[in-house]
Image (tube, rainbow, N blue to C red; front, side):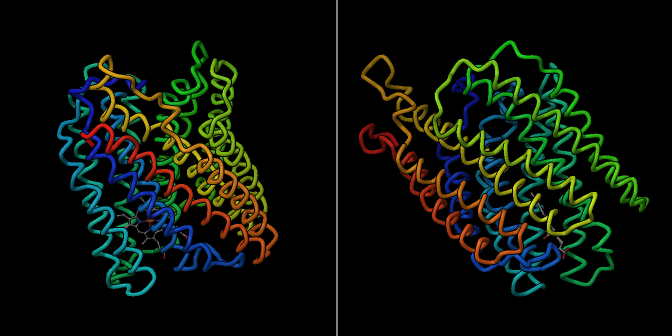
Length: 417
Ligand code: HEM
């Protein structure tokens, strides 16, 4: 697994806070869902606050932690300076809290929180760019990392500009730039990064090989072109071109799903463990999000758009991330605590390091909750939405307990954790 030498591998103490704090933010954000109902619109400032609590505190925090581990694997060189990561998580965490407080309570705090988030991300981007400069072989993955980081930079730049508009009254047309911000960060960074990582992780954990990779190569190109076109259409203010750009992104995601199907068909490991079930739920959610989004685009319906965003974020992003925690955390713990003991004494298998019952509960509550609340959003039913949210929050508590359990595995026994 993770073909990294000890020299490249960052210490567990550096990555653990990203995963732990990310999970705490996940619990907080899912509890926050209980205060919303099915009538909320995307312009509601409390929803904007919640979106950042969830996306910055949970999604970005965990992606950054995973990147600390994966960048050396994908780029085949060590980090420029892995120590940067010790300051990224506290700044990102504090900045997120500041931004959320800015959206929810005191708009004046927004630029300060935004600045902390911006700087933490610039540090992340600097390490990635300086690491990229050491790479000798420019593969498609290397190009993808470069493109996604550029989109993130532009996305947070637009976000910060809007934050100045809200916090200190700088004249920014929010209605015009909001779409570009969302497309750059969610499409240009989160989705493209998940696509790039999944091309490495899905075959590795499912033991697939010999599949055609051309669909994902085309999908990367189409998705990047779609995001760039959307940004260009925002700069010159051409709404019809923005719709064309969205359609290109939808087509790219269709191709990506086809690629995932090809990987699935060639998998040698047939076990339906928590990781596999999370992947299935995640990809079904992505397919559903595309379908609902297409209807929303044709019908111009806010309800369909919101339901599409729901399944994209709570179904696709969340299940892909949480499913991988059950693989990555045990691996990191194993690498830290047991790899020095190999050959000297009996060491546990990775599968023994997952709390299966707790993981089953986490999956069942979260999946039922996402489906129920998604239906609630579509049907405009507050009861279904709130019931689903309560299920998701319960699932999140199981996730937190599982992550803690995995992180503490063998801590006292091996005496070096
Ligand atoms: C420096 C970092 C960031 C700043 C300063 C920032 C700021 C903002 C601002 C001011 C808004 C618009 C609020 C409005 O329309 O009234 C917004 C919307 C949004 N941002 Fe960010 N943002 C940042 C990073 C991110 C990141 C990294 C993500 C995703 C991973 C993200 C996702 C979103 C989403 C989804 C919305 C729309 C929410 C809605 O309409 O309900 N933002 N952001």
